[in-house]
Length: 305
Image (cartoon, rainbow, N blue to C red; front, side, top):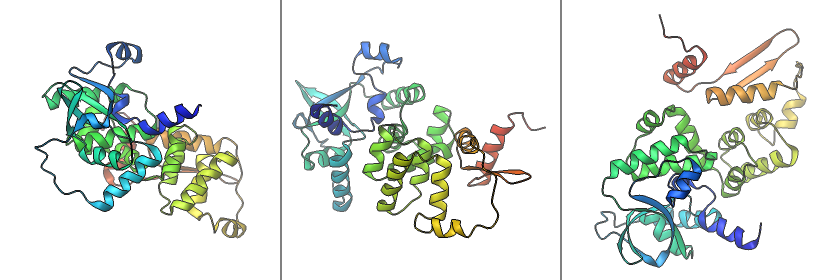
């Protein structure tokens, strides 16, 4: 990858979010298999061509939160495009995303990713975005960014989002948690170096330094999701001492980790598979009774008698 490509990728952000759901041209819509969104297109606009909405009800922007967003944009780029409307020749007015616009200026960006909207029917655009989200193949970070922007900009609840795109609310909630990963780990997820399973395990690690160190180990040692989960559960510092005190050895099967990962992906929760000397055990974790009912419905799709 050339230096220019690296700069472009950094400027536009690693997680495309809604950018991946809004075709820039009809030809791009046809080529990607996405539905062309009536009255909306994606564009990379000069930052100075965009002005704030004078009717913006929000006048106070938390300085600490703004500083965090500026740092994020400098590290990984803008993950969520703003939404604008044309107001003249090459001039645009913000509809949504003033914090992102302000932070991009503070971060020294010269352009900003934007959805240019030429319709006033907000529900129409939102429904089209939701349909394209269901059809587009996004990486986990891009999917999380798209979910978050729909929740923030269009007033969707997680439950509403789940119903409209045919996914479970826990799945959406778990995907959104990936945005808590450190910028360095996010870059690996966006590049496909870390899988969604690895990312879900790492997001439970609160210490950023340990999180990044574990991510480096995954890449360097080729750790499976199951192996990473065991390290996270035991604690990276305590793992050697605790492992040495294990009294009951278990039988190792090469396929167990892969099978556990497949089950975790299938049921969208953590699944452990253990094999002892004479028998095995599968442990499926759940958060709430509703989450348990969701998992059981996936295991046994027959309607209850």
